[in-house]
Length: 273
Ligand SMILES: [Zn+2]
Image (cartoon, rainbow, N blue to C red):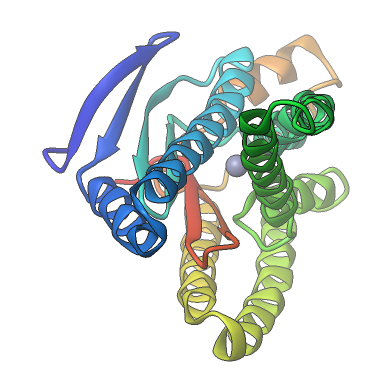
């Protein structure tokens, strides 16, 4: 993709930044200028830190996927969030469950790291004022990570929480039926997003639309490509079958979150072609 520029390679995964990301940086800088250049620059630092957390979230998915033998072709950061381009979504419910949870788990882990540091900086800030500023910035970043984890775990398939739901259903139900019910639950939540978004944040309406379309596309893809997968634990042979689950060309997860400044982040997990 020419619209993205590769900026790094982490654990063999190309990290790219979409050019429109620069627009977001410019907008945050511009919006913050009313309170002075120093304040504006701090907002940019916070934004970049947030996207570092988004990147770590994506790497969490990628690491879990790699553990199950699924390569990640790349991660792209865009203004609306990150995209982890996984080769496929495993048809094994346990594997999908672990991969879906790995992203939010990273954010929960980061919150656990930041919490004592925020408290420490806050205490020291009574004596050294720059540390109080550091504490308030880190505290905001910490709450953004809480929001990232919580929002992504909303059971709106194909967001992370929706994948968890599908995986749990697929343990008991036929894979297609599980996907259908995960989609249905996601559609109900999408309607709630539309109602809530109409009053509070129009971007949520777009997110709802995106979730609805992505869920339907994945459901249709599951119907089209369906081949039965035996439970992984039942025999060594079925383990191989489960491991070699067919590619789901259009499979992807979406998440979105609303930041305190009104920016909505969406992320996809899976092939985007
Ligand atoms: Zn995720």
